Length: 69
Image (cartoon, rainbow, N blue to C red; front, side, top):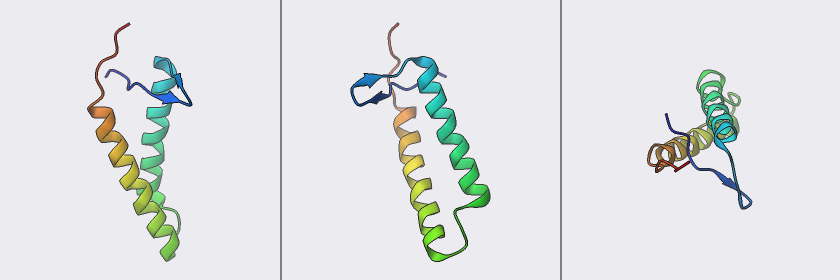
């Protein structure tokens, strides 16, 4: 898998850094799916919102053009 191009505050991450962010995001998603953020209404809503945001980011990652170099 080619890593996404990720820019933070104008700094483009190198491949290893982008991979770290991508893997951390996926690990967080797995944690959320398994454990959530609590059984109360707030925890359930936050879990849903985080998972939706991760899904949107994953869609962007899937559409990321291959970087040269």
